[in-house]
Length: 177
Image (tube, rainbow, N blue to C red; front, side, top):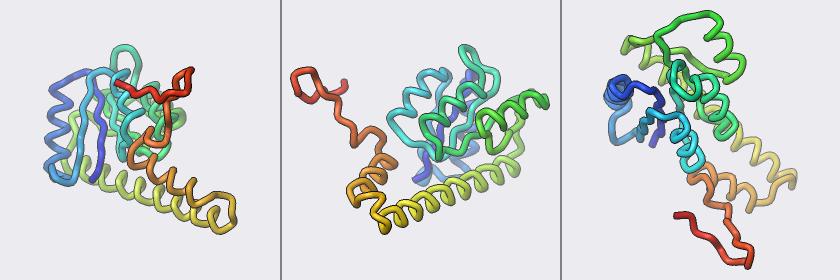
């Protein structure tokens, strides 16, 4: 199942984009989460891995480039895309250089263009994962990684935080609410 995170301060835009992506990907093949607040979306990135993250450029609290830079730190394999009604060269350049944005989606988007961008983004994500798995296999053969480390990486990719334990000062395990 593909996981997408959409962030825009305009709820109507989020719903329209979510509908467009569900039509394209199918509701059974995609898990699409929407957020109007970038800080809540960043917190969610600590809990779940996303294949694609699409953020609007103009948002309160932080702009899309700042948000996607934070996403890049938390989820380097997520393909980052920028959504904006403004097409300014400086905005595009900053997004590409600082947040390594894969594609820029203009508002209002064209369905065919959106479809192509999403297909290319998913192909890029799949390639990055395959390359990392191949690199891990080579490290395993060279004894640079143990089988346990490879499995821990795989589990972290599926469920972020699953291999981390929050210990209390007395040695007890603290369960997050």
